[in-house]
Length: 443
Image 1 (spheres, helix red, strand yellow):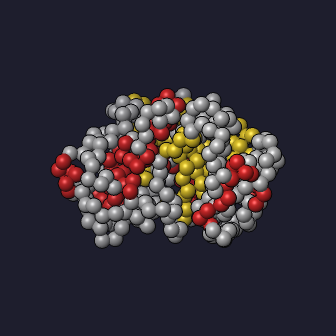
Image 2 (tube, one colour):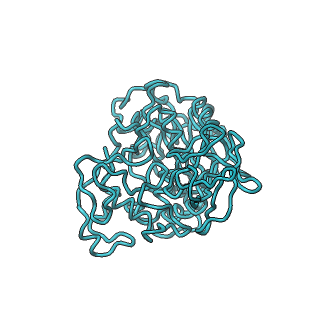
Image 3 (cartoon, one colour):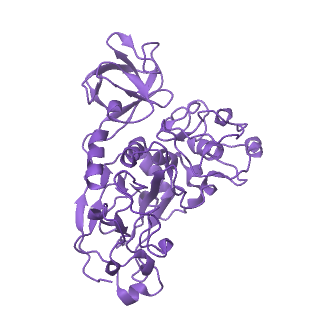
């Protein structure tokens, strides 16, 4: 293993000075402009769904179409019109409906996709709203919440920020486009992790590829767990959510970004994860390689880093005295077996969930769930033969589901207000994910 000085090339992602907006319909879809002349709601975020504020309303970024905006009936919403015609809840002409301007990206989705395909990675600068970032930091006990207790087993139940970040719509659209599949799912349950300050002795995760490739890791045993694939067969995208600022000194992930089309393991001399976790390896061989040919991406909190799971990478080292938070997620095509059992985070295991009374708890069924399987429209594919949950009748077989997933709010769960509560149910969004998710997460 090499012990050369730690001197990776550093890419710095700066906080944006301006950003675009989404216009979110009452049912959670996005208002889009498909042809430069008309509007309609759609269940995905692509170039058609990107708007910018303009005098008197919002301008469609790709086409220049202008829709006028006035105050909506609910706080924080607007009523829209195209010419002299009010825009209804489904984007068609009709009775005016309340649309919610929402935190959008800084570039068009197609621009991000072009970079992603060309280089195997892309950074979505501060794409998560500040309230979501704050909720994730609280869950992870990092930044302003340093030292507060963590409960990684219940992150989906404890704060809507976990669900809202998991289904961030632009990153999911990019994953689908990059892998060229519509049906995608998480490879392992979402939670916030915190990298603690290095003590000079602990093992440091070495070089590897991510799930399902697992090149160079303990789980790969003989070297490979999955074949390298090709541009037409990409088996996973890794999504790193920067809960804290990612910096060279606080343990930002170390990559070899040029490796995303290299069919094989990282060099053994770099220190593969298969070896670096062995007791005493750091003391005997030093730290994994971090010299020429390695890279670090520094990015502000709220940024999402997407990268091809074939890219070689290793853990960074936190040389500060503060914990650094992140959400690390593998996103795979629907046919890939999950990395680990997925039921635990979506079961409440007899405990009362947020906003759940004894009667609702008593009527929950206790069946384990399988990994989530996102439908092309962003909802969850229902599991055949499952009965509707008594407290959530829209979650039965054949129903679209009352569940926030895939970047949109399913029918029956309205977008939350500033406090994260549904406008009708008055319950935390996390409860809907944990309860309805048990009914509808498919394999």
